[in-house]
Amino acid sequence: MERKDILMLKIDYQLVKRSTPVVFPKNLGFGNYFTDHIFEMDYNEQAGWHNPVIKPLSQMSMHPATMFIHYGQAIFEGLKAFYTGDDKPVIFRPERHFQRLNNSARRMCIPEIKIEDAVCALEELIAIEKEWIPRGEGEALYIRPFVFGVDPVLGVKPANNYKFLIILSPVGAYYPEGFKPIKILIQDDFVRAVRKGLGECKTPANYASSLLGTELAKKAGFTQVLWLDAVELKYIEEVGTMNIFVRFKDEIVTPQLTGGILPGVTRASVIDILKEWNMNVVERRLSLDELFEEYKKGNVLEVFGTGTAAIITVVGLLKYKDNTLMINDGESGEVALRLFDHITKLQRAAVEDTHNWLHYVPVKEEVLV
Ligand SMILES: *Cc1c(COP(=O)(O)O)cnc(C)c1O
Image (cartoon, rainbow, N blue to C red; front, side):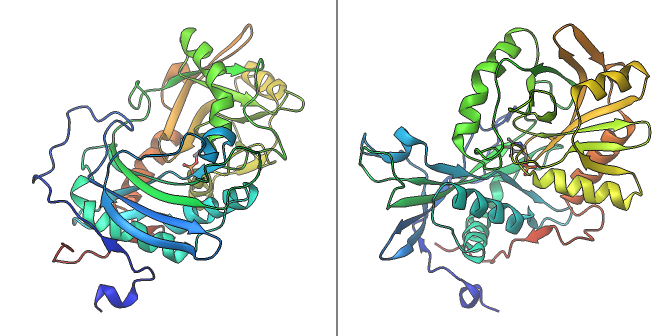
């Protein structure tokens, strides 16, 4: 079928001629480089979402009173595209990510975007930018969709006008350690998010509240902070860019979603995979006391984080006040390694995609110029 017939959106294409081929910098790092084009769409109450366009990435000009800058009414997503072994561009679980974008939207009084429209916009953008998908181990094209209120008005209320944008960034490892185990500080001087607050949303406020605690942890030699529940400061919640799993002798525990935790797509995928492997994975509350007690008994075998950016990241050391927990001698454990291997293969269709998690991007021979 001609691609045009199934387009949900009538996208306006304003494409630049690229200096071919794309040349990747040596060390991609994370979030440092961007592709040539962005997708953009506007919202107002009369027209709903309208004016979808794919155009050259450029500076944005904004009124200084633009609402989200002052009141934080903004949401985002983070997902990835890859090349399969036979050179087809794929996106990992886009529908699920756009569903979560809409969950965030409802909590933030932001108008939802039809999932088919968002997926269509993303497919078109990826088809145009597919040369920007890197092929190195652990590399991917990171996709950042985001929505924010743009009315130039001071006063706390939801905006009437919004922008939905998608930008793309070729990335390597998220942490400076690469894929080596990281050290994490368990923090109780600050909290990231609170149940019934914004913890379940991917919204800038949660990252703003995590900055100071994380900066202090970095100064003390740690990579990240493990946040506790904001009410009792007793239960483990998450790392702020990734969800956390603890492998005990006879169960693998991840904190249950109580409202203060971002429901990670990688978290959900890992739970499904572990179940398929007949491992005893359990979502429940996990207190620091329990963690320390089990550690003393030698029952804490592995700790790892999960996230789109971090993939599977091993935690080699955890510190809380005077307690230092060295996990598996600071080395990667077998379940984390097996998960990393499986997920990175799955994302490139090197193992069978039994769940239909891969979304193949239809690519036209003729690029739309
Ligand atoms: C994005 C994010 C995660 C990971 O979610 P994925 O869907 O797996 O990428 C975990 N915690 C927070 C706070 C996040 O923003």
